[in-house]
Image (cartoon, rainbow, N blue to C red; front, side, top):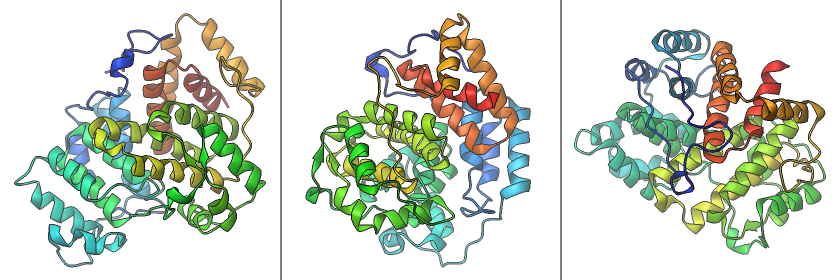
Length: 373
């Protein structure tokens, strides 16, 4: 099973359908996702990436034996067993335990019980309206997990994704109505970079650094709200890709995969693209960008990224000159699956689908240089 492309040099989807992404299915995936439900939300030095990795790998064309090998590798190296240390709760009590990580198993169990009477996707839509997602939750992993779960349709995984969003709830806490406007994502990042002057934020984990940013008076003073954010997602995706190209930073990687997940959630429920939530997602991106030092981004040419590093520029030229770019994508996907690295697999999947929807060759170029290094 391999991912197919009707055209490499141009987007597969027409502009009218660019918000849609296909379901993720295979005969092997449901059973493996069921096994993932025995893994705790918090694992060895990380959160439970296994179901996200498996879903991404499946969409990239991994067969049953490869999916099984990926699961086994992750289970042996990172997994911790799911335990419930809190009492059972009803759906009416979810608001009371929001933001309390210890309640993951109890929240998940309550949602699963409710799914016995309601369709999983319908219940997810209701809960997303009742508990608007905070993108920063678990360093973007909660929205990523839920987005993949909704595409697989696995009820247990949908419940886990929703439970992760509720128990790990981490809003920016910023009142965007008091902020000055910026006209574009690039202008907003530029303002922050000028104000922060490369400040380093302490913390071992992504969330630790982001929490420090959200308490920083300079950031809170200079972080702008975005003019009409609902129409600026394409520009933000391009800017975040540029950020990752320039820095290869781990947090920038999460921004890129988080934006891919946000696209999927908006396709699932367009009602999420309201002003307040759109601003919250933008401010979350600003906080993550700031947490890595708010590096100044190079000026952009009208036709693509400007002043790219020589290695990326050369890789892009090679790819554009290569009539068989599909083979290049297959090589990148092969390397990602071979790596058994959950972040690299999700990154490759996000880049592959964003390329399919946008035709931006930089998604392929950055992965090609990464796996060549």
